[in-house]
Every structure is written in C-alpha cells, then in structure tokens.
View (spheres, rainbow, N blue to C red):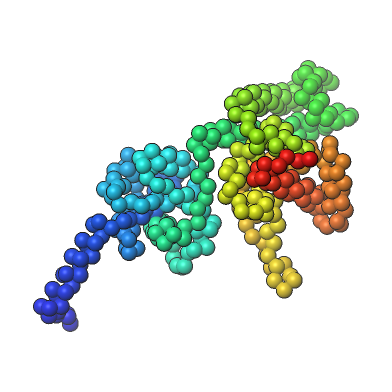
Length: 361
C-alpha cells in the first residue's frame, strides 16, 4: 500500500531538496582519488560529506582535468592514494593549480570503519578524511630532485644484481678449481685467466655469460656514479654526513636525498623507524604477541645505513667493539641483529646532524 503525502508535506520536501541543491552549488568540495595501474576512481564530496559524484576514469590526465574543472572553483583539496605510479597524476594536478595531498595508505587503513570496501568506498574515505582534516599524509618529494633520487635507486638495483652475478660466478669457478677466488679477484682478472684449465665448452659458456654480465653491470654502476655525484649541489648537510664513519660520497648522497625534509620527523626514533631500523615487536603482559609491519618505511635508507654499518665496523675501532658486544648477546641471528643495531646508531647520528647542524666529533 502506497503512502500519500499531504500538500504541505510535499511542498516541504520540495523546498528541502531545492535548498540542499542551492547550498551544494556554491559550497566547497573535496576530492578523493583511488589510483590503479590502468584507471582511477574519483569521488567528490560536498561540504556536508554527501557524495556529489563517483566516476571511474582511464589513466589519462586530460579526462581527469576535464572532470575536475567542472568543480574547479570549489575544490579545496585532492587526496591521492600513495602508489608507485602516481607521478603523472600528482604533477599534472599540481600544474593545473590544485592542492594535492598524498595519502599515507597504511595509516588510512586504520581509519576504516566499514566491513565492506571497494574502489568507490576507498575514494570516498580519502575525500572524507581530507574534508574532516584527519587525512594521514605522506611526504610529497620535491620534483626537482626526484629524478636524481630515482637514478640512485636504480644504482642500488644494479649493485644488488652485480652481487648476485658475482656470487654465482664465484660458486661456478669454485666447483672447477681447487681454490676459491675472492670478489676482488673476479673483478680484476681477465676472462682468459678465469677460463684457464676449463675444457668443458658448456662451462666455458657459463663463465663467459656471467663474466660479461658482471662487467656490464660494473660499467653501468660506475657511469651512474660519474653522472650523479657532480650533478648534486654539495651542501652543508651533505658534508656533515661524510663525517660519519662508513658513509662516503655515494651513501651520503643517497641518505641526503632519501631523507628529504627532516622537519617531518619529530624525534630521532621517528627517523630510525622510517629507516626500518626500529623493533616492530608487540608485547602484552611481558609476552610477545606479534609484530608490526616491518616493511613500513624507506627500504633505500635501510639499505644505505646497513651498508654504512658494514664499512664502519671495518675501519672504526669503536664501532667494531659495539658490534662485537651486540653479537655476543647469544641470540639467534646475532650477526644480523648486531649489524642492524649499529646501523640504527648511525641513523640516529645522521638525524642529529641533519636537524641540528652539528658534525660528528
């Protein structure tokens, strides 16, 4: 059975919708964008938090700007999900004059209160958190230094591949010879010396392939170092990092670029946690109940400080004593724990230098 409204009630409902529509026309709006590899979903909320529009678009900046320009004068901010492929969208929105906020994805998940979630609810959540001023934000890295930072990240990948090829070649030659060759020997000796006394043609092909790959990777790493070091304008903070034992030009440049604006870290512990060098265990009543997200943070800073710790303990007696003391703790994987503890000390020293301007005595 239908419900019949009186004339007065119908007029009241009509006036309510007209008033809501008029207030929405000139009110401020916030935008949330859930970004994927091939498309993104845009959600636009009014000042009251009501969805005005949710629409999925292809990853083409022209389509995104055409949609947002309909609300251009009313958009107070745009929250974009932090993903690996967001450069084109963030740069394009900033160039168009929009205020972009980079959402910190793990922290946003903690704000979720619904059981069901999809792309539409994710985009609405980003817009709602931004409207309420509760959006956990990530760091928008300066565009002018981003290319150099990413080039050094590619260098790290090449160095890791170089180590993998070097170990594979070392293992191969160990099976064919009576003694093992060190990594420096493999980098220094010519290919003919490595092939001596190896008669099997298939083994020769293996040595040639690995040796050629090792030389190519080594040349690529050296070329990147020649191009990046002069390209970076040396500043006082970079010079202070070089006073830390174990940190040279390359690692100092990586740490300086990856750290970015140090004012975003309130304490040294926050910076160490960002470097993935802080413990993530959860305890209750004296017992371990689990672990947090150990991968939350910057893996490039973690790699740089762990590399610096290896050099530091070789050439700094104080660091070697600290490393040995941690190593004698008797726990499993004590070597890894000691290296990480030393790397954490170096990260704290770097934080003090980059925030206070003090050099290591």
